[in-house]
Image (cartoon, rainbow, N blue to C red):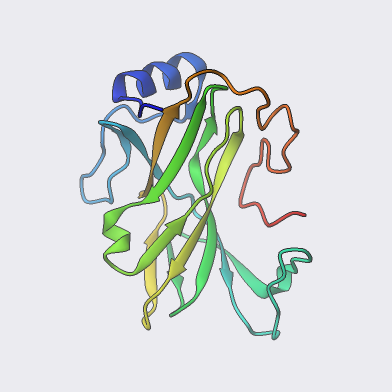
Length: 184
């Protein structure tokens, strides 16, 4: 399963709308970098955040997720409380080809500040805004800057197209927009 290069990412993003909007070059003038890189694409975090809080003594239950466990913020700079967590989404909308699996890793700039970005793999033929899970592992409040880079997506081509894609299964997170909460 080879990793796919910038030439393939560019051609697929521009020709088949795999990444919209697509940024051709790494942008990094006074911002955390984003855009096309050698073997990946650095995505931006949008200005929509759901910050977990325990004001109402909520319990996080993936089978019965309650919205009162977080506060919504639309902001250019999100402050995540110490040892806490926020959900966000990418600016970019992704459409993954049938023979590709996409893995996401957090950017080192945030990782070196104790902020960990988690995203499950983007399966073949999945599409949507990617919901980002951002953990502040530090004992201090931490800032996340909207419309700047937060993670890098790596694209891997399978030996052949899969028998059943995410779209074929009618996956529950297909074509999601905005920050999408857990579903059962």
